[in-house]
Amino acid sequence: MDNKTLSDFMPKVSSDGEITYGEKSSSQSVTLTNDHIIKVLTGIKDPEMDMNIYDLGLIYDISIDNFNNIKIIMTLTTVNCPVADSFPLEVAKKVHELKDVGQVSIKLTFQPPWNKDMMSENAKLALGF
Image (cartoon, rainbow, N blue to C red; front, side, top):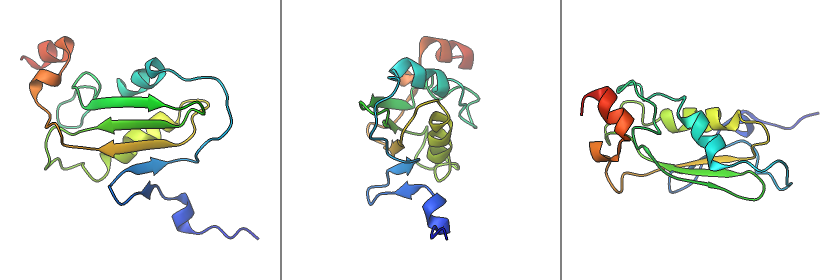
């Protein structure tokens, strides 16, 4: 009989608020690159700005270990963002859909605070800045 409970299927949240999704990998496979991750991130739109989160400058760092476990440090456009509770998990799930991905960790930070200068030139043009 399987002894799994509902919590075994839920994302894990550390004491510092980092969300982890998926199982940590310890076997080497095809090596993923930041470009693979960025391609996924450019397909995820900020629900309020209608622009992808990468070009908005919401992604501060992407790291991939030798086993394709991924850690992303990101922010939101405001501390009071209405999707702050759900959006990091949505990002983790989308990245986890990539082939050969191990665990995806999302660390949400507001340091430094996001501002429009963090956007790509394309995002600034599209949003009229």
